[in-house]
Image (cartoon, rainbow over all chains, first blue to last red):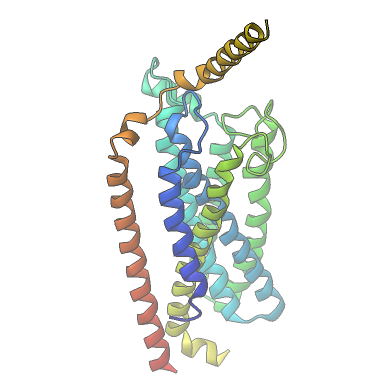
Length: 237
Length: 72
């Protein structure tokens, strides 16, 4: 294993997250949310990890535009793919969570769903993920290697720039079921001390770091495998 | 008189404590699940799955390292 201390750190933090996140009696007793508030350590962390991975991806995309090294292109692509995986996991876990907390048991499933589907953060996240999905489609539709790398790097910068309005800015401006929407406390609900019980931070922040590091680990494996596969290509370049 | 005041104060504090507990007591949490210890079973299952996935990742990491050595 190459440079393994941060991989051990990631596993240690995640074991702590699972044990403390499920067992520690430090969560506020809130109606409706009840014990599901512990999903904060899992569902929300998927999105944080996705943001970290997409940020790595755009950094390598810009690096490619500066140095024209195909290695940066491979890194950029693999970070984006892992980011999409984490985003899809965030979406799936959010759907399960919403079904048991936001859904109105007095209404039909379809009516209840139509109320939840208006949630701006859901729509924003869907748009962001589709844009990143289009990144992969765009990449694989171009045959010429350098052209593929260049166009997808430029597109990556655009996709990253769109990520912020669609999942951070617009949902904050509209009424939202998520924390931090219009009429909320204002500011970032993850960092605002009034929106999150202080003791929950002791699990939440390590959880973010742990999940992000796990994402980076998976990406490095994929990058190393691709580098072995494309070895000849890189030497020619 | 002093004793009366003190007992009154204690009573008032007692009501305060009961008020403070009221909102939390009405919210239903998984208290039984915790008190009878079954929650540990769930934690053990999740940890086993997680450790299994991590061991798989470690093996994969080792395999990639070996491939890197061979192709160098």
